[in-house]
Structures are given as structure tokens and as C-alpha cells.
Length: 311
Ligand code: BDR
Ligand code: CA
Image (tube, rainbow, N blue to C red; front, side, top):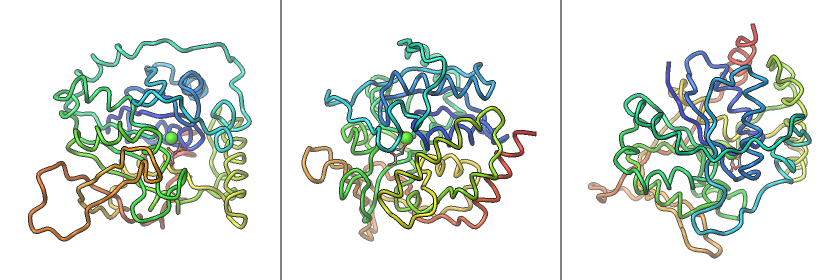
């Protein structure tokens, strides 16, 4: 089994990615960090804990991560896309405040798993960057970082050029790109094109989660329809790196030196891959970018993984 630690901001597609991670028998989730992003940190923590209750997996530790970006600005949340509380129209019924500032408890877990853990990040990189600032050697020990983020020579989603996770904290993204040695990025170039359609959703049977799965997906479709009227379904960005963990052969990867535009202004959060054909690459971490995905088995795989877990 591949052990993973997930940083996320649920968020509709984060929630789908979490459901997939718990359904895939080849993955073992050792912990979840919930950050501000699509919604506030407070609601993100609550949403993760609520989902774990539905899945019967409250044994998995939840850590509260960053509440804002490294530049200190107030977070710009995404209620139109992800709902007022991060789960579309849905509010967890037991909505008392569950936030504990327990992030220090993650350190023993990181030390314990440093030789066998993959880190998957589905939101802003603020918490991860902070860990790199405090524990650079420990953080460099991890096998792999799978990052949903970026847009390379394609339109962004929050601005004409920037993708939300990078735009939300470009300084943090810069720190992570500069410090981590083994990053794989899953940018909008891929994630904008892989859809869960209403037809596919009907075939996903998640015990205990049906009550939230269908309303959150419907909410997501409605949002995407306002953007692209003839769209059938919606992308599920955060699901893509999760799928790649056990289906690497569906993807084409290229190695590039990556830069992030950290400064405010029109280009904030722009991700740049140096695609010039160097014979000798400059001395900086080179990262993998997923540039293509063969999605011919996507639907079948999702049904198989998610519906099998229900048996
Ligand atoms: C990313 O931004 C968030 O809205 C999604 O959850 C995803 O992580 C896509 O740009
Ligand atoms: Ca996310």
C-alpha cells in the first residue's frame, strides 16, 4: 500500500478526492491537513471530520493547517464554486466548532513516516511551505510530492493566467518549488479536461456518502454551467493527482525547471516551466509536470474503485 498524507481545503473536488483515496485499496491515508482555501480553515476542518464520520474512518488524524497565506492577506474564499461552507448546498448537521490548533501533533507522524510517505496537496501551499521553512531537511526526506496546481501556457481559472491553488499563496508555492526535490505537478492543462458527468455520478455508490455526494456534484455542475453553458458535468481537479498515485502509466510527464510569479499584479500566481531545450539544465530543482493523461479507463476505474469499496 502507498502511504499518503493529504493537505486539502474541502471543497467539492477535494471531497471527491478524499472519498477516492479512502476507497482505493492500494492507498493508505495516514493523516489529513485541512487548510483555508475554498472555504475557511474552520469549515475545512469540520468538513474533513464530517466526511471521516460518514466513511467510518475517524481513526485517521486530522490536523488544522494554515488559516491564511504567507503574505498575511485575508483569504479570498470561493462560496460561488464550493458553497458557503465548502460543501455546496450542504451543511454538516453536527455543525459545532471542531477546530483544534493541533498542528504540532503532525511532527511525530512526519518523522515516523519519512522514508515511506507520499505527500499529496490539493489546496494552497501555505502549510507545506511553513514546514519547509521550519524543517527543510525532514521535508526533503519524503519520496514524492503530488501537487494539484498550476497552468502552463493555458488559461488560468482565478485570473487569466493563474490557477487557484498557486494564486492563493504564490509565495508558498515558490518556497515549495524551490525547496522540494521531487514534486509532480498536476496542472489545469490536464485537470480542466477530465469530467465527472451526471451519468457517471449516478454509477458511483458510496455508502453513507450519497447524501452529500450528489448535492455537492450538482452544485459544482451548476457553477461550471455558468462558465461554459454547454458543459456536461464538471472537472474534478483534485481527483487527478490522487488517481495518478496508483495509475502512473496513464500519464505523460516532462521534467522542467518551474518558476512561480510571487509578486502582486496581473501575473500573480503564474507558473512558468522552462521549456527551452537546454543541454545542461540550471542548478535548481527540476520538477515533473503531468502534461497528458490517457483517460480511456477513467470512468470504469472510478466506478470500480468507489463502488467496490462499498461491497
Ligand atoms: C483547485 O482550486 C480549488 O478550487 C479546487 O479545489 C482545486 O484544488 C483548482 O484550481
Ligand atoms: Ca482543493
